[in-house]
Amino acid sequence: MLSLPKNFETFNEARQKSFMALYQAKERGKKIIGTFCSYTPVEIIHAAGAIPVGLCGKSEQGIAEAEAILPKTICPLIKASYGMAITDQCPYFYFSDGILAETTCDGKKKMYELMGKIKPVHVMNLPQSKDQALAIDAWTEEVKRAAKFLEDLLHVSITPEKLHDAIVYRNRLRRAIVDLYEVAKIKPSPVSGYELSTVAESADFHFTDDDLIAKIEKTTRDFKARTRNDGANRPRVLITGCPNAGVRDKIIKRLEELGADYVCADTCSGPRVQKFMIDENADPYRAIAERYLKINCSVMTPNEARFDDIKDLVKEYQVDGVIEIVLHGCHTFAVEAYTTMNIIQNELSMPYMRLDTDFSQSDGGQIETRLGAFIEMMIAA
Ligand code: SF4
Ligand code: SF4
Image (cartoon, rainbow, N blue to C red; front, side, top):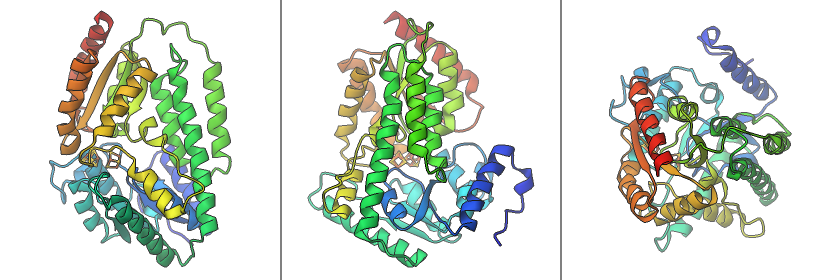
């Protein structure tokens, strides 16, 4: 019989529900593998018969406890992820049988060393440049090595057939999520970006739903059927930079309350990453490696494709301004922000604003003032 964490009774209803859904899956014999990054090839987790769950911390919870061990100056996402793990506040971490991780930024890869003392952690060596001669060969080998880790950990065999089924399933899921995001291409968008991103991200947490894809497709149809009369004069905003789930209420919700529409994310959870499909007819390991190596994260150097993507998204979503979110301690996105600013302001002649922040609420007032001024700037442009 599985046990619940000691502090289970102190969790709110939603958290208790998440715990119980996973608890029941585990009772049915399902294995859970935690992930932290868009580079993690979830297809091999499905093919191993396990459920992949995203574990990134998205709030202040656990940060104080993490800061007793990790430096205060590293990114809040890393501190929250580790803090949630060591305090048993994350249902997904608590029930995970192992963690599939990757060498992206320095803070994360060093944090994984500590996390490995709590759970089995396998770290994949991600090439630092997708353009280097042997990057794809090395990454293909890393995908195979990760599959072997899962086979050994879970005592299963990952067959080519299971891998193919997983690829087909995840491609279908990604297409459904991209279609959902593309609702916001309609001008004015019939749905708030805050609502849309919340629905898209919730797909990560409905891992026990057999009909997840059908549910997303239905939500897309429902959103498209909505009409909206108040959107004509609202500026349309693209948000780029670090993953923004941990600051969604403070920035995105407030932006929309103040009078702009958040229509597109050039972030890990947005179409930037979801649009890449896996070739279903090629060698599966190579095809998986090729798909994931296309991701334009700032941990890659150089990362020119990200800037080309931003320019495309600005056009496709008819954007009026760009906000870049840089989490404190994220050096790679902070450095790339200079290039983004130049492209948006000088090449596209469009308003750009950079917000440096973390998961605390202490800068909420200052952010609100800057968002208000930015909306006025977009209206005047
Ligand atoms: S921003 Fe980069 S490192 Fe962070 S989750 Fe996305 S791909 Fe991974
Ligand atoms: S936001 Fe930046 S520092 Fe934080 S985990 Fe992602 S890449 Fe690393």
